[in-house]
Length: 132
Length: 132
DNA sequence: CTGGATCCCATGAGATACTG
DNA sequence: CAGTATCTCATGGGATCCAG
Image (cartoon, rainbow over all chains, first blue to last red):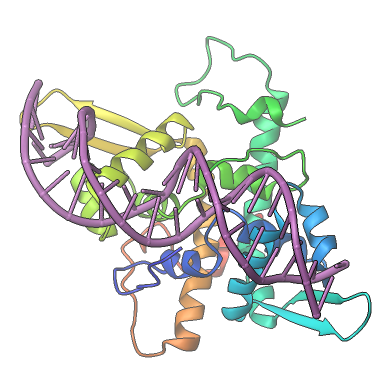
């Protein structure tokens, strides 16, 4: 993500410049419950590569959203935790989760569309099926 | 955006698959107050190219988030409006805007942001809605 | 005015292998 | 375990020109 301009107008862009991108919101969401180790985080997210996890965590750390703690142990242990600033993103993340849940329910439980459906009835996007 | 997996766990990914990316949240945010024409949208966003605006709007349309209306006039007139599903994203967008505003205040106390979605997106506390 | 068509570059993102 | 280091490919995204 680029453009933390904020000069161009809306505050949404500021937020996006910090937590925008494919992985950051997911990572942050999985950190909401509390600190997690690197591998633990990777497993709970699923589908993310070590490389991306590392890169995104570094950016989040740099933005002051997460705190990285390295323990001088063998085997190595590193954990990541939301800072206070990071925790302040909770409303955004929760709103996202809530919408995703409702959206899934809407198209998962709805079944085939009635043809007398209401005017604003959206076409079911491709995600619906995968939502087991 | 890709990966509509949701099988890996969290609903956040579902939301991201619909409104993820650099421009979609900004576009949606600027559509909150009501329908806008193509050029109008482009101007209010600022910094987006016609190409990206078109592409992103097409994807949003396909996802059932925005509705595109073409008027058979000369000069051509096309406007975009949030569908009911699109409007249901408001809590997410507002949460993003709120966070961006606070963040800006915290670190950039100098520059006030103008907010053209103020009409339907008041900073009032009543937006807390489903954000439990 | 609203975009479609092209060209082109930067970055996101996956796969794999290697290391302190 | 928690990363680096490469390599590679796809996509995002910008610039410009053209068209109904």
